Length: 152
Image 1 (cartoon, rainbow, N blue to C red):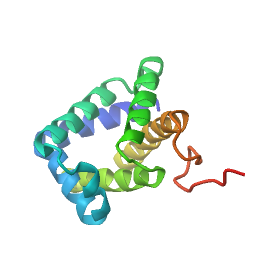
Image 2: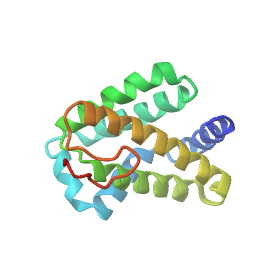
Image 3: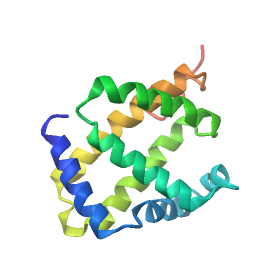
Image 4: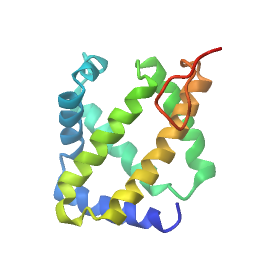
């Protein structure tokens, strides 16, 4: 990712400062665009879920350049999400809603450079998590795409 890492870090710091309820806005966006995802959170304490998402974002962003340390954590996170009912296509849904939420909060500061850096980061993170899900026994699919592949 190189220089994009610093772009992601700087923009996230500004975005988080502008919108302390970033995770809530993300979930609102996700549940509006993909209402079927709400069922994954039935019985969840959403305030706790929002804190976990925010903490996960902070931890991942802090370690973006530390691939040897970050990769096993993302693989495990992807494996864990299989048990929550997350499917391969949902990674695209989450990415679209996350990037939309970040862009909305950033406003004019969401430049093409920032958008590209975040897209690159999200694709790398989601691909690693999908690999973890696949290793955990999820339905076979392409790591670089949300389209399921034939088991034959």
